[in-house]
Image (tube, rainbow, N blue to C red; front, top):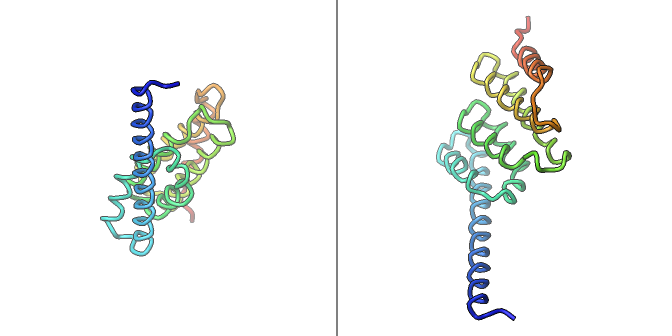
Length: 169
């Protein structure tokens, strides 16, 4: 049997929890709506800004839902936008951690593959080489049991970068 004070605290906690869930749901809906606007007009800076400022505020639960519907597609839609790259990788790093089962950690490969594809489409942009390196190091650290990057991993990333930036005759 709970004391009246304990019951009041529990009700207050439940109420705050419900309010946080509603705010999170509303934020996710707003992000999705702004992404739809961005699909119609990829130059819509206001919609993009709202997405980039809202994504980091989402709970991991909502962020995971938006992984395939907004996060990765946004990176494909705006690959040369530094803000998009920074926000998506920050969200991915928050979402995909070493504490997850390997099957979930392998999702980090999606971001590495996308980074390589972006570099291949824009090989002249040196900032993208650094981005691939950052994403690659994160990817390998996530999938390795030791969390340590080997020289072989680093060489693999460098080879991937070289392959994507090689001039074709």
